[in-house]
Length: 392
Image (cartoon, rainbow, N blue to C red; front, side, top):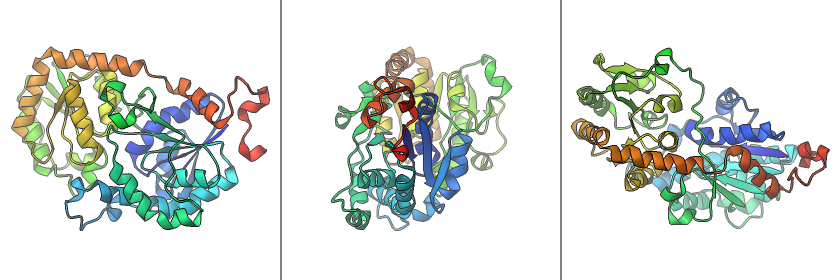
């Protein structure tokens, strides 16, 4: 079976696809990732073959500076950004579908070129859902931006997936996700090494602090003074604070107190396994990594899916949520003290981790994809496992 994977050129969008891509390859299937030119190295660093679908683009160049609500409160505008990326890369993606002839297209939910090309060529399409939010604004924006592309391909509307995979634990999902098929969240954090000190048990409760990869790029993410204040206030707690932030963000900080350790880019899954608390921006990667590890969280969301991720985490009792635009360093430190001091958060987080562990693994999910593509190896001849549309 041949599977074409498509993703927006953003780490947090590609990374959830990587474990499933590995599982497909381990099962003997061919995988190819189509992405923008500048994102190809990120894909190949994950051990996956990649093909360029079009020129690279900077997400900051596509964000609407004239948004009436500001970038953090404009999901429709963000949907336009992803749809614009898709329109620019549709020709390249369509050419790949026609030449490579995949049996299946797998796309993360904000990448539209792959699904449109799949539907135009009659190929089944699977969506990987990220975040708990429905984000109807994204789809509405994409319908408008891609209207001309859809018309030229004889399509009347943006296609719906034949199957939606959802890595969020069922108890945190919203009503629109009732028909989604569960997929165990297996963290992949990109190219980063594990430092020696991380293998030693911490002497005091450990707090991890990360803000992801996108938020710091958008102006300063609204974090400039807040990050410095957070470090200062969290350092007053009887805990060790580990900063898992990029070098550029770290350069904004004054000299760090002795209770604070700067880790830089680090495998978040390995860090969270040693933490009593993770403080983060609400992106799916950080949230699910903590949930899978049974680690309580404090979420400081700013826009789109992060807002509803934070609400779901707080409602489930695995942490607290404070909007980034109203958060104060002292308030976050007080919240951290509360979470560390009350065992109920850790107990609930452990239960949710068990729920995630009970979901179908990427290896088990491969069978569902085989059935959808009509390539179930249980019913295929020995040669059929690697057979593909391109060989018919």
